[in-house]
Amino acid sequence: MASPDTQRWNPVLALYVAVALVASMGLPFVRVAPNRLLSGDPIFLGDVLQRQGSPLVVALVLAVFTLLVLAIGQPQRRFTQALVSVAMAASLAGLWLLASHVSSSVSPVDHPLQRTALGAGFWTLAALAWLTALDAVARLNLATLPRLIVHIAGCLPLLLSLSEGQNLSLAKEYANHSDVVGPAVVRHLQIVMLAVVPAVVIGVPLAWRMSRSAMLRQGLFPLLNLIQTIPAIALFGLLMAPLAWLAVQLPMLGSAGIRGVGMAPAVLALFLYSLLPIVRAALAGLEQVPAETILAARAMGMSPWQIFWQIELPLELPVLLIGVRTALVQTIGLAAVCALIGAGGLGQIMFDGLFSAANELVILGVMPIVLLAMLADSFFQILETMLKTPAP
Image (cartoon, rainbow, N blue to C red; front, top):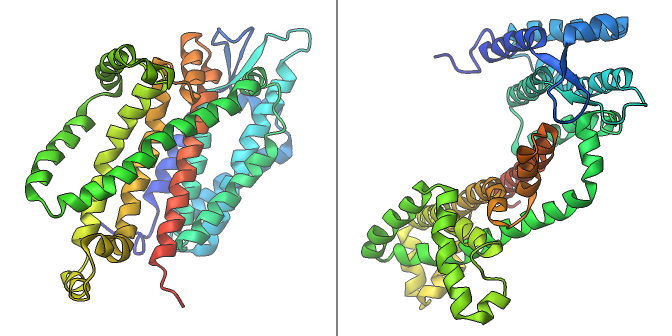
């Protein structure tokens, strides 16, 4: 298989363009419904461009399509890839503005319950534009930090255009629930931090002890692997009964918030899920520390804990951060399920939308989770790059 540097054409981009053409013709761009509970009537992108799109909009669509076709045959030209990334960033904002224009034209003022929902065509085209931008930026062969800066800059046109589209159902759902979104984000982060930070504090010394005890390693890893195979809902159920019993037997624990439902089983379950990637990464990092360095430290009279804190931990940190990054992103996603046992967070908004058949409310709960995971992943990418960069 040819490497990206030797390819004469870009099959990934060709697939994206083909899927985009099918989605624009076969999937509804928006749906107009009399209220939030009905799916509504579909409006396709071709109808939007034909009835409401100005000649300039049509010309821009054709220009973007032409650029993508050219980029398929020029995968190694950095200038073309830079143009594609800029065009995709503008396309994301353009899709939102176009949907906003449709919503404003089809939603009469005397029908406040009418909703214009973003259709499958919009979400497919937006996802393909984002993936195309990622592919173009990857082909620019930038370093980690410049690449992340380019990604952030690519989101700016969309962020600047969010002030439009107030008639879209997604914006209306946010307006109706703006007082709970902020506290839900804070609660979500609280659950994540209460699970991941103790996992790091306990997992790193545990990995250090396992590096010196083969018996402990052989006995603990199967247990951590088994925990990973248990579905989150089942693990919550396994933890609820013991915690409820403890709250009854020790009222002081119940007054502290440790009960069969709520934060306690949620945090404990996510803590158990986080242990495996952190312990594995910490152990792998410890095994990469040169034995000669450890022997030299012992010869200098350093105690085992001094060796760990001053030598082993700094040397294993780049590998350890990979495990923490994996655990953090995983926990941000799993924390949404904690709403089912009364822990709150963004999952509460998501499940409220599911139970009331309000798709936009589901999206309102899911999008911050995705953004938080992306921000956490980007932060650790920058941190890992800084650790790998040699000091001047």
